[in-house]
Length: 130
Image 1 (cartoon, one colour):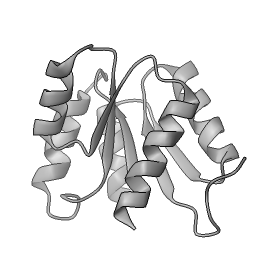
Image 2: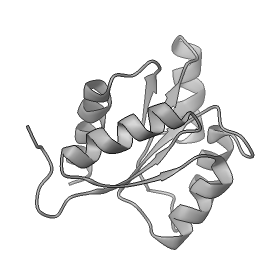
Image 3: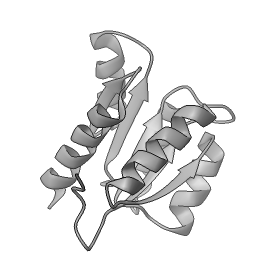
Image 4: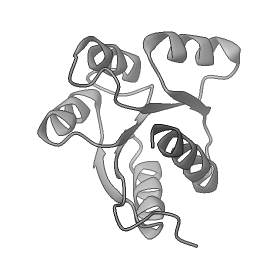
């Protein structure tokens, strides 16, 4: 069942684990979204600078520049201050969610995150932005 419309949202998946990154990209593309990917924090910032997505799905534990640092940089730049960012982390508990939200996350999910769970969160964030 496809959920994206003709004016499909552009989503950037930032995940260092290749299998997870590919799974999320393929699943969201199959739903009709336009999806790009980055494997580290530096690549994520470059990708966002080149083409601002409608939503970023951002792993917290990334090489080169961790996800929370990426998020803080985005929030400090007026061009990206309101860009929706959904964080993913294997860290459990309310502390992770509190830290992610304090850094500026729009929403925070815990790993492992099934593609269907990610889709529901993506759809919710995008629906709230429309």
